[in-house]
Image (spheres, rainbow, N blue to C red):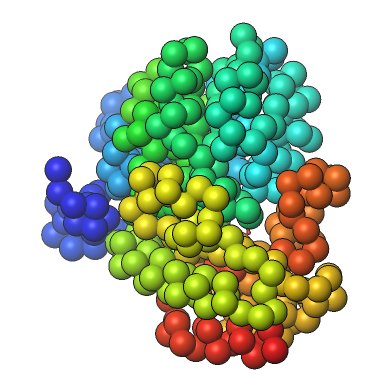
Length: 379
Ligand code: P1T
């Protein structure tokens, strides 16, 4: 198999047979001519399948070492489709620290379909064993988690889950396949908010599901076709284009993030830094073993209170105060008020998502400019 950067550039990008376009054309058509009822060239209607989407899905599958991939209209639509494979009465055991929107989808929508969600600290192996029950069908893992950047042992979870016939789903948005490939570690299904690193340019909302379990693939494909949360062709085209530079972008994101994390750790105004690449991170050894790099997300606590955190958030000039992550431009945000506002205050408090917690998405700008920007905001 070719290297991941080669596959990011070439997978699904074979020159078009009609005119030899090196960049395959964008197929916007919603429907396809048939020579006789049911006879066509592989596509009949774009919700069911589209050539631009299919090329992009080939690339997604290749990068995550999967056999099947599905491009969804958002990360949350991808998560929704995975959970819809379950039946009433089934249980999902979920890591306690997840994106606020994932928590909201589980607790306020999917719970009403009689699916139970149990949240537990999956960095603790004894909790994991005790919490898996007879009705547990999926273990849902983010690693690194959003926003506390905990690292969860995928190999351990997958081995344990397999012994109990439970499937493991991994939200690989923060790590990307450049830093971590969960299917290779035994996971059954991987999803992404493509909105983030995979597209990389903050101009597409998208989701992806990748698996090498053909039964799961059949179910996800049917749910996508029947419920309709497909990614539009133009967005597939943009995301596929963005992915070509995924490896080079990630190398810059993670190198700069390491430098910034080290700098913040020595800063007098900073209480604590959370970054899996720092030896002070509680699961640093696991991160070294499990990941090929620690990605570009950093969370840190400023000294003081909410007012001090807000001052920093209002004063950065290169880091834009905005939700989301994974784009070429650096972003800064306040999880308690922004991305994780949908968590009840007591849940946030128990988890440690405090008012002084700030999250950075380190972009690909010159790192010395980013450090200077943070320094003047922290001053
Ligand atoms: O926004 P959407 O493409 O639907 O993806 C949802 C999602 C799923 N999983 C993770 C780990 C995520 O971080 C997200 C979206 N997160 C943000 C918008 C954010 O700022 O954290």
